[in-house]
Image (cartoon, rainbow, N blue to C red; front, side):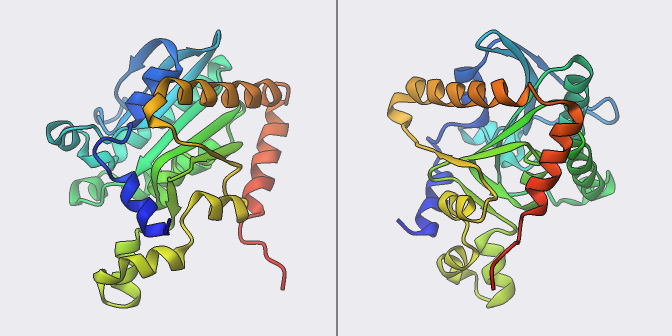
Length: 260
């Protein structure tokens, strides 16, 4: 299967969304709203829930299923208030000692004029900065598209996993083809050149593992994810805040290393 084939799979309407994974993995959920500065953003949902008896903070980018939902959620492209809501929940989690679990599925942050006026770039940068410095464990799973800084703002974590057909890229293949070749029709070539697949990300040490997809047995798939999260948290919660920050720093400093 080509990289472009996998990209197309991530955009299928029937693919489970962030809200579906939250519903399937966590219990006793309480959703929280708003960034306490401007408003709420339906593209990002978040709150507190239980993971096998352990309280956690969950944050998920949610595209929605039908057209009405997708328009309400801006097709999974968060605005500044969405990222600031996510940051508020992360800092709250740190205050109360709760791990942070993020689900990423976005083509990228919303790039409209209103988002720029409210500081989209600053909101993303602040999230990356603060997430790198969290004193509690953070785990992210790319469940569909992981597009540029809009994805990294929720993926500056101790562990990053990807579903087997998920993609992760600095730019969309369409954008890459338009810039490099002035031809949006070469999107398949761009997808191959960008090395956006889950296996590519594991090879580059950007992702820590690939989670098999089994949407026909979604409950079983959620059980597998829950087991992975629990095993990681059992290890990460034994580390001090400084050890978590140091490990996170070293993890990201390895990006881009290569042998001549």
